[in-house]
Length: 163
Image (cartoon, rainbow, N blue to C red; front, side, top):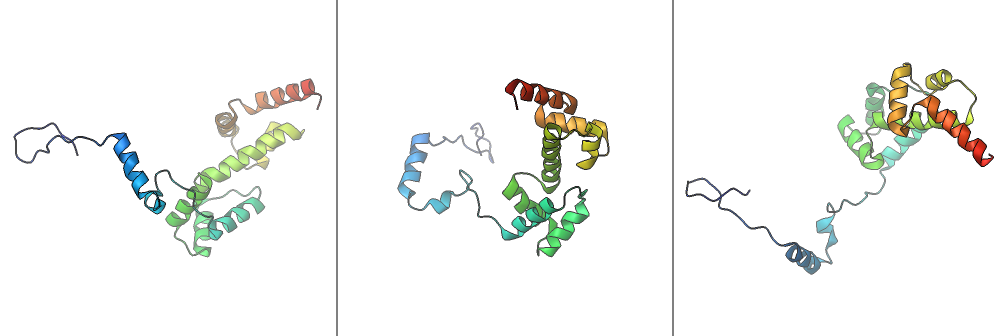
């Protein structure tokens, strides 16, 4: 901890930081033992089979409204606490289980808007959203435009490209 130097007892003396070249040289000296530096930068861990099986289960269950109790059940079935399951899930996907499912639903909605003649409301319901404003807000956060504009822009682009 660095604080301004003073003569009062209990205060830390001002310290100097190491120059970057010295830190780089230290790392080079250790060089062979890279295990010491696995967190800087963070390296991707090998896939955990328990999380992989959970991802497969989620992908098979289309249209399911996942609740926390479902995730807790899934964690227990795999011999994990919910917090550990969520940690491993986030490590594997970069998202919490809830956000992963929401993003998957939004990607599916985007695909349906591009390929299906179904109405936006039907698509919204089919991917698991019950509230139109919630769906529009989340869809816009993902794509940058509301679903109606996304569909019209996609149709216009498809016509222009001749597909």
